[in-house]
Amino acid sequence: MSRLVPARRPATYDDLLSVPDHLVAEILDGDLHASPRPSVAHTIATTSLSAFVVGPFDHGRGGPGGWWILGEPELHLGDDVVVPDLAGWRRARLTEMPRGAFLSVAPDWVCETVSPSTERIDRGQKLAIYARESVSSIWLVNPLSETLEAYRLEQGRWLLLNTHAGDVSARIEPFDAIELELWRLWGRSEPR
Image 1 (spheres, helix red, strand yellow):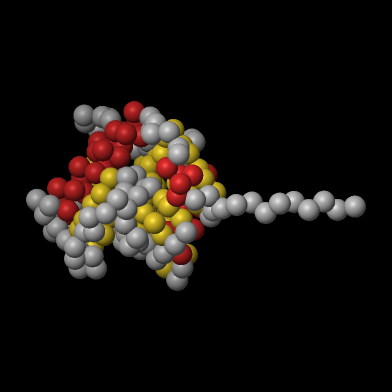
Image 2 (cartoon, rainbow, N blue to C red; image 1 turned 90 degrees about the vertical axis):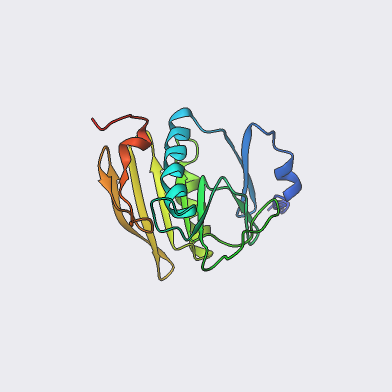
């Protein structure tokens, strides 16, 4: 005899709002995910990377400008609610930044700083959502392995452009107008 299994109710925004403030909450493919706040190494990598892109690309100081860069924006993409570590929109495409609590316009670039507790979701469900929404560039930063993987969306699939590791300096699209010193992301004051 077969048993009927009740249909699972997709998570709602009210479910997301009920998650305690010390957790980062997202709705991915109808499921509510709550992750712990990032570690210090994660925060150093994300903050250092933010400093690299905000000055020259968002504010145009020492670089080409032309971007809006936000840390941990809440993105409502279809039925999904995602919170990337960093996201950027080309100002030519998004001329004015919305003023609400969240954005429903997919970014042009996303950076996920992966950690042991989020890597499976970042590499799986979130990459699929970003591809579906036509985000053109993704960086996956791993402060534990000291790597930055740069991807470009081509024909709906992620193409790995390069994996940068350790203390190298590199020009990485879409911010290849300026060289990024990766050792800064790993919390060092100078390269080894």
